[in-house]
Length: 213
Ligand code: PRP
Image (cartoon, rainbow, N blue to C red; front, top):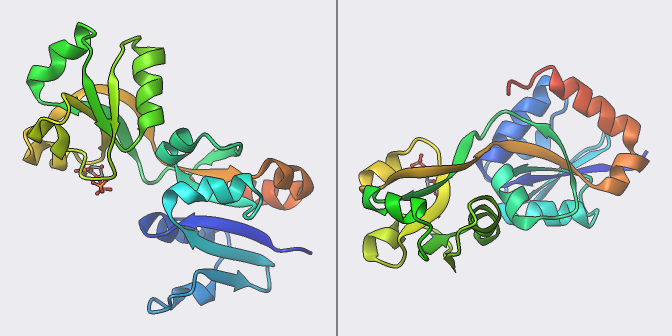
């Protein structure tokens, strides 16, 4: 039997994924050592391997078959647009992709003005403004602390993740429009899905019984 390899998103998502996998009897003792700087872990008995990667890289590993299975946020899956099969909503990591700004920016959206949109997710923003709203905008890519942009006058609005809403509130911003709901998803390499169909199907069937969407 060959190893089935999982690519996990480093941090909270990996932790929640392992907690869910443990419920169906899949664990990885090697991963418990918190001080370890190792990036790859093996469960010899089940012939499984797990590695931790940066969020945006997970769909890349899965598309190229370096990992058979990945767990990624829906935001990353949409933004990266990799050729992977999204097979399961894991029900955790729930948040929303939204257009946000000061309340005064709302008319700029309803009047379809040519505005600047700052975001870490240029593909999602482009798709929303061009294909859903049919509004021409200038998209500015940032790498974090997106909420700064409308405060310092870089852009009129932002497209960003909202979880509790406290970052927006503390910075005098609000949700102006909803783009889409987000959560952690399981993705699979298309070739792996055919070649390892039985093993992957079994994992999915067992996971479905524990997932609360
Ligand atoms: C994310 C997101 C918002 C914040 C939303 O940022 O970009 O800034 O979390 O969460 P809230 O609604 O619960 O306040 P993250 O902390 O990932 O860092 P970033 O600014 O580097 O993107």
